[in-house]
Image (cartoon, rainbow, N blue to C red; front, side, top):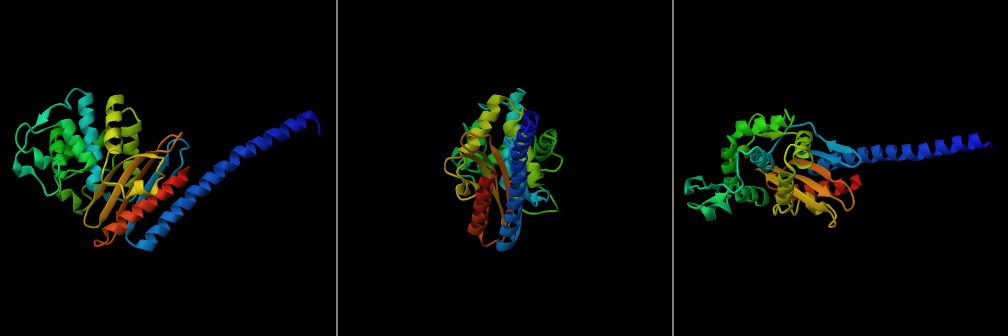
Length: 288
């Protein structure tokens, strides 16, 4: 073989080595989508998932364009709106908000301990909303940004024209003609902008991620299916028949993955619904 032919053959071989992994990646993505569909069939209900590997750009999903109730995953967006106001000089994390017993909801494990002066700082309310999913904290933060309509305007500023926030806790957990809904793809795109883009300042992004990493409500959901060596931050949400979880995860030595999972299942099987999301987390780990 002439030297020129040898070089040409070598280049063709190298090209093949580049192309084959791309086909493999596409096949694996389709396989994950198939497993998500199988998971839904096995357990019933309706499962919506979107996954994105930031490093490779690989995307997998199931019912990723269908609407689901946000439930408490919307707290991530509201805290994002708070931090955007902080970045613009319109809010301070150190500002104290004093509230009375009349605003305390059934699930308010942190805020119920701080009724009356001196109240809680905006930062403390954000921490309570994201790490424990305190519903009163959510309502107080929602009020601070101007209410649900203002929160939705903030979401629109992320180029998300799908997600909508319409009501307060706890009403927002009740299905009502598309109110307080998102799609897995829309939520993933908004999370990407908030956590990895330039919508927030570097310090606000770091703070938001830190709160998500310290969440205490997601240990049996997406996190449960991911390797112990991964760093994970997430925000859960639940309703009468809904179990949701949205997460950012860092495999060692790699760029992060984003996962959004929304599941409507049997009302009396909350543990099963959580187990389904744990399996989604396991499938997300296959995006490597």
